[in-house]
Amino acid sequence: MIDRAVRYASVDALRGLTVAAMLLVNDPGDWGHVYWPLEHSEWNGCTPTDLIFPVFLFIVGVSITLAIVPRLEADADRAPIRRAALWRASRIVGLGLLLNVAAWIAIPDGHLRLPGVLQRIGLCFAAAAMLAIYARPRTQWLLAAVLLLGYALLLWAGGSLEPWSNIVSRFDSAVLGHFVYATDPATGRGHDPEGWLSTIPSLATTLLGLRAGEWLRRGNLRALLAGAVVALIAGWCASFWVPINKNLWTSSYVLWTGGWAMLALAAAHVLIDRRGWPAVGRAFGVNAIAAYAGSGLMVYLLIGLGINGPLYQHVFAGWMTPRFGPYVPSVAYGLAFVAVWWIVVRAMDARKIYLKV
Image (cartoon, rainbow, N blue to C red; front, side):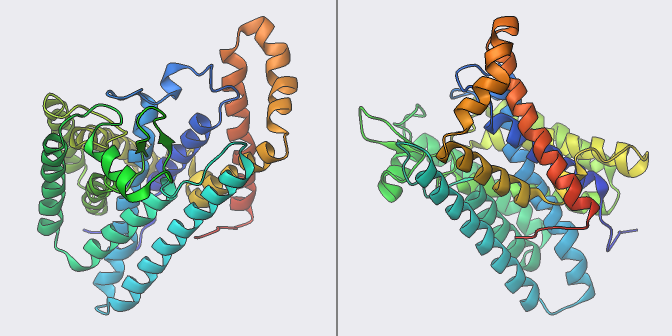
């Protein structure tokens, strides 16, 4: 039997835990002193932090299946569903651009950036929603394979896979100019980890979630586990051809992180939906975009008002560093930041306040 109108607490919890993890890794007290699991890989490789964003995009795909497919089964008119999905995607992209403008205004010596996390989420949401509405499962699988193989060939055809000289950075530089995350002072070439070209394989991440969401609806735990194993093995094997790399969102990275995302979804489903464990993280999950955007605006406000540095120094680093070293106050600040926003989303959830973008 297929569940048609069921909200899975496991999905809300997993989404919420990824948002909480995003806040933790994005907001250390001191960027010069961060424990390695809370940092991205410098280039090739995959740390725990490198799993966070792809798991969130994977959950976007799962959520699309759970929200859209039952409506398609109940109503043959697809136009309202299409319009609602595209309108939501445009709002997510617009919110991401507004956050970038806020960062540009607030951060000293900052510059305007066009790509971003929310922009990528919005674009992948739009594309995956259209595929959920108009494409059959076989077509979705085929497109994911074409995206992964085609992107891997494109990276190799582009020559170097090193920083700044790879085809992704060259493309972003040509299209976006200096409106990117970082620019190499030596060459003037830019790079953005959420740039336009690397958004192509990130759609494959969302498509994996789209198909995993259908397995979840059908209660097909074996398919989820088998898919996880196949993706992990395929990602590991592919890494000998194209390395696992978040900045380039390589095909091996899609498969490797997709495998871990399927395992996480299977574990959450068994523990929360079937065994009744508490849905830890749910409060963040039901207000995910609001928590991410609101916390970002909070950081920019603290920086713009000149409060962030003194706050960290007086409340955390001043007394912790002599006793515990510089890494402990840095992570303590991040944990306190997450705790503040946990209180906010818990209060919102208790009052049934859910801000949908």
